[in-house]
Length: 438
Image (cartoon, rainbow, N blue to C red; front, side):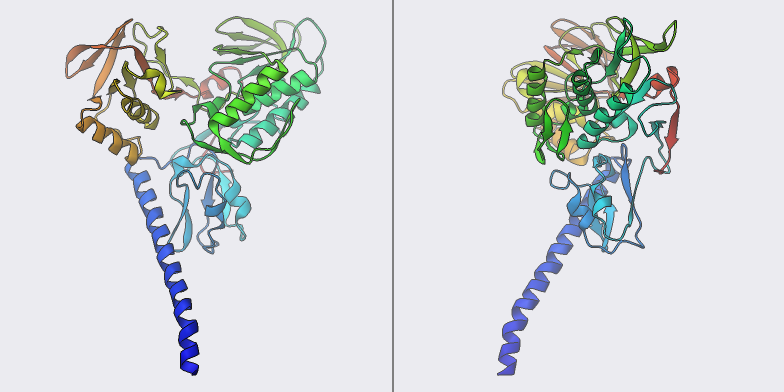
């Protein structure tokens, strides 16, 4: 009888244990694959703030893995041999939720690595730089989390309000550079305070968020948005978040000067304040708040015809290219994703041009997708090629020592960006290169 009861209880316990071991092994194999893919694609350097995990302290509880807001979209942290690891460093965008979730304080958040430094401007607790009157908030200062950027934008504006000379004279009180989460929140706070402002944005509303792939899940936390109140999103899509911000922009009548890029910030010729020069004019102001993010200014090809309206530097909606001849330039993930998403549309011809001989900077999944579509003649891939000229209805590409003219209605250049470090230094802001330090 005792043996019968032992069997009744032992069988389900053993079954549960076997299921647990199998599930753990599957998760570990997935983590190993993610780490191997990152190494193969040379995607081993985190772009900004990221965790460093002490294996001697880690107890293997998976709290950090489960807490990562990006976990359900793509791998970031994983478990290998019972210890937490940053398996896909390039996917980490600095939420910091892993550190807060760790019960044994085994995680430190740092910028840069031993091999690759990250330039971070020197900013005081009130968000003012070493140049009195110039402030920095959001991703440029190292914080990419949407909620943190919104809070920093609002708090930085509060610091601007404390400056002498705000609200007096015939100049603007502040020029806000950038309309991402931090710049958007700061602009609303300035409106709420009745300041005289100009907000300029070289691209579109949303900053880095607007550059996320279509449909990407954006994880955020409730945040206080001036003139609006608490944003109660806990998770939403990129499209819904941007739609919400656009609604706020229209309701509050916030004016943003889009497609206007700042080229210089110089001290005013007399007294305190600055003269901000953009691609469209010059503004005299008491203070400057930089919320420009870290992606910088899109790198251009520098070829004839690049000023044509059909040339863009990121893909917004593949559907707008249906039935057209399209050229995509670049070899990173953004270029490959743009190329294969457009090539899937009916009646569309896509040419992918890259100056090197291999897509070494792209993820394995994107490389495989492009290779499969090229083999199936769903797109044309020209390695070791260069764009020589862009015309109204065609492009000229040099490939294999010859020039080819291709029909074309759209050009998408995904050649990366010129980081803002040089600009910051040119206007006198101290920048520190961090190699795996907080």
